Length: 271
Image (cartoon, rainbow, N blue to C red):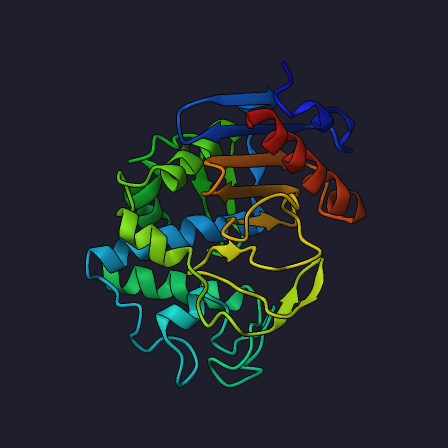
């Protein structure tokens, strides 16, 4: 019986791995599951989870001021603070546009370290990585794109997103994966302007986006993130499955078709 992962063999690059896990405990993997890959922007999922733990611990509040005047922790997480894609000052008023970018997560990492009185990488390790057994994952440098991990570890994280409770309370995850300011338009990097461009609290929400990097059969509630390094993780709560892939070929035209195709095969296999 197919596990849906056969398509990985045709992907470009030297090192690659992919796998899936279901809410009822089934799983499959292929490739170099212990190779440590750059996560690029998939790092944002780890940072967002650490921020949400801090909210649970009352170290931070989602609606406290943070970032540009008028912005909050919530708006930073959902890319609606007005900060730009890369660097510089605000490019819009808070809450008016979905401007995906790295600076918002740099602000969040600094704020988390200040409030918790511990270095950002140490807080992520203590709050997220160690409790989930992600011992091969390292978070250094940027809170937006600085992590490295293995497929095995990323699937451990995915299991928490399927069955929360060890790190995130179920109600915390439900709130984080619900669209925030759901009617905002914006550009999804690599896939163009989306109207609307829904986003959760650090987690991208598929919604009605088209084109998209997840399989077309996935529900609109599907959430996750991808990185320019060639990494992605998505969770479809309606299908009860999480799928992750890692590689050393950066995102490009090849991924726009290969990633959704692999996801479609996975959904067909588990069903």
